[in-house]
Image (tube, one colour):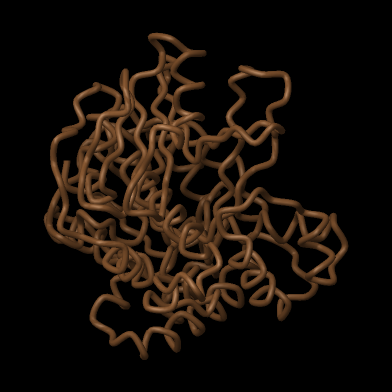
Length: 404
């Protein structure tokens, strides 16, 4: 954050509501002389900014921190005008609970002038007070492969069902549902109108629930539209809006062109595993019961791992792009991380406590097809032991994600 402010005219911290953006930028402002913090969640401040956007941002000698800037899109246009005339770095620090390049009427206003920093709900390392290094270690081929874990499947499911929102951390399990339900209603009602023209706003919470039912599955928009009772074109537009406000995330298929039969559908995830579990009506106890879960435990744990990797990728040195791989013959790898230099790390997620070599078929295919570009592959599982599955491929306890 400090480095971005030091060399960039405007820095924007974007991410889901209640992820901790306000706390972060207030702390930044508190450490800087002449910094001013304002929030557009305040009605009076919002009225002033709306009445005179240029006057609101002009004449500041220090860092101006504007929280929830997407509420007044004209502020972004005013900031663009100011930083074009005076390109000094460190002038504006913004937050947004919607992706600013998706905000109506200002999509390109700060392109090339603003650095985007994504802030997600807490990772497992942040909850435990540890900085994770798994992504960087994987690309360096230095993930420790001889460490065990004391955690079991129920432990991982409990972590997944809790999720990472700070407000959920101290709540009893039976009190989380009210918060999650209120959260979805608030985000769809308050944030969506700023990024899309939605004629049927009341339908969005139901669409989010239908997305949660498909958590970790290839996205079939036609089937989703049919279940939602919406036109397919409208469903595409609503999905874009839900992604812009960080309720869902679509992970694109990896275009490695390794076979002629690669599937191109994105995979659909709710961005927080705890929210996904709640929308599915799932609990750790029920998911751990093999007579009740019916595979839902695997989908939730996969989404949990994807969420952890998304967080780590944002602050890693490599900052890889995140994809999945699947071909029409059923060969797949849950997560493919690709660096700018073309190097690749593959991750498979299994809900079982033990792993066999036959479950590494997808990873071996990537390794054999990519040669030296393939740096590391791991099957993350819920058991206690790590094992070597052959050249650059290992089975590791899921905890390795935040303990490596």
